[in-house]
Length: 466
Image (spheres, one colour):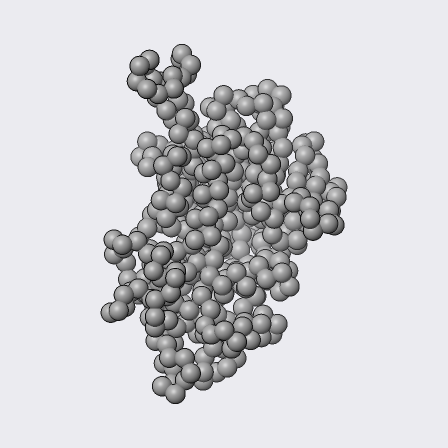
C-alpha cells in the first residue's frame, strides 16, 4: 500500500487553481508478491514503512511521460483512472503491453508461481462446482488476465487427473488477455508455442492453440467475446490492476483526486484535488460513506456485472482472488517495480500499478440475481480446500531435501497470515439456483428434482455467505 504524496500548492497565478491532494494516514506495507523456488524465496522480503519513499531510482520513460504531459497540457488534469489506463494498457507503450513483468526477474510474483498446490486446489474447486451444477455436457474454463499461464496449466493437469470424474465433458479453455507479450508467454506455457495468430483485427479470437493435454485454447481481448455456455470464470490478481477513481472528502463535499503537472517541475507529475464536483464524484460515492478517502473501480463493476449476467443466463461460477477489503480501506493505490514499492507517479510505464479490490462494491454491483460468497482469506480458502493434506502427500513422495524445503516455504508463503494468507481474499459469484433449498409444491417456486439438495460450496464456509 502507498500513501498519497502531499503535493506543493499551485501558485495563485496558475491558470487552473487546484487544491493539493491530501493523503490518508501512513500505514505499514507488506510486500506479498514474492516467493517461488530458491531464487524467488531469496528475493522475498517484508517491506515495512510508515510513509512510502519517492526516492526510487530509475530512468523516466520519455515516451509515456511526454504523452501524459501533452494530454494534461491540452485538456487539463486527468483522473487517476485515465492515468492508470494509459500507463498500463496504452497500445504503444503501456506497461502490460510491452513487458513480461511476472516472475523472479520481473516486478512481482503471484501465487500460482509460488506453488503448484495453489492451482491444483483451484482446479479441484472448478470441478466441484461443475459437478454441483449437474455436470453440464460442456465446461468452459475462462481466465481473465492469465499472467504467465501457470494457474491454467495447473488446473488443466488436475482436469487430466480427474478425467473419470469429468465423464467425457467437452472442456475448452478461453483466456482474456490484452497484452500481446503475455499471450506469447501463455502460449509457450500451455501449448509449447503451437498456436496460430489471427492477423485480422475483425476476429474476436486473436490466437488459438491446443493444450499439452489436447484441449482447445483461444485468446480474446474482451470478456464479451468469449462464447456463451456454462463457464467457470477465474480472475486472479486481475481486478487490482483495473483503473480506479480516487475521491477526497472536503468541507465542500466529495471531490475527485486528479493527476496534474507540477508547475515547479514540469517533468514531474503530482496529485491535486479538483475544486468542483465531477461526474464521477457525484455518481460513484455512496450516500452513507463514512471514510475520508475512497477508491472506486467502475470498470471492475462493469466486469463483475458481465460475469453475473453470464452466470444467470448460462450457468457457472466466478472465483475472484485478489488483494482486497470489504469496504474499509482508504488509500491503497501503489506501484511495484523489481519487487519493491515504487512511486506511482515516477517514471510512468516502468512499474505495475495496483489498488486493493473493494469487494463490498463488487457485491453491490453484482446484484441480487447471483449469490456472492466471501470475501474470505486465502488461508481460510486453501485450508478448507485441503492444502494441508495435499502438502503431506507431496512431502511423503518427495525425498530431495531441497525440494521438501521449497514445498514447506511455499506453503508458508501462501498461508501465513503475516505473508499472503491474510492479505489475499477469495470471493465467488454463483447462480442462485446453485444454493436454492428444495421447495415443496405450492410454494410458488420451481421445484427441484427429488433428492437434489444443494451441495456445500468447496472452500467457503457459511460465514462467507453474503
